[in-house]
Length: 343
Image (cartoon, helix red, strand yellow):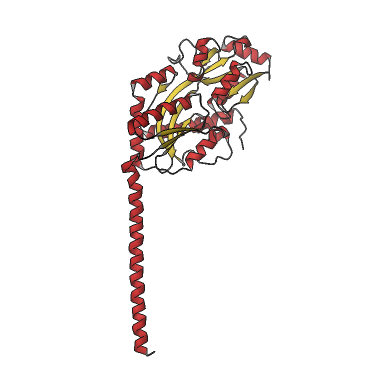
């Protein structure tokens, strides 16, 4: 091949390579642009298909009740199925981790409660980061806990219960909805402030715990107002005190524990909704707006009141700030009560 022919062929190959590179670059730009449009489209069209609402508890308690109320209202408003999926176990870690690792597209929601903020102090190694791996959506509701006992225990006041427990160290059993639950930490705070020695019996949720309390298999428990108020009203359980600082309209006639010989004792239980980290801001806004509207519905307010729960609502940042505060608060309680961390 002559030198001139060689250079001509080389120049032609170079032009082809440059042309190919340009095409590749254009394709790459088109792909990135398409991805951006694809990411924007769900927000514009959201929701276009079924939404999954994960509850990391078994059916029966208010965590589940709130999910079913909210999911039905979302379904009515948006015309797409909103399916509640109970994923109990692992101290709520199983359900929480499932949502943390889900696509942040607004189609997977998580109902969270008190343990969500306590778990970072309870467990040595969480499979997720509570603040980094979730998007706060709504501060849903709050309620105090009630200290209840089986009537056959023979105590009628907080003072009588403390005296009975001190006379029977290690013989009084208390139930909880799991390690790190509000039931558990309420009693651990109470124990550390009163010096009693009681035995912890954890369950996979409030419903089986209350069933065993009604069956006299355990003696006492702190539980969310909606979970035990019906049994208190029916006389099946005896309420000794409420964990709010002042008398609560949600638990009429039940004296605050702080006014019954345990000064400064207070626990507020809360419920909220989060999604995976990285959700599009406009999807977050749409969800938050609709969820706040649901909390303002008269029938929802009535159903919450019947359950002994107060709706809260507000912007996502309110719930984000609340989560940070609760994580710090219960880290101190876990440390001061010398609660061993779980693996």
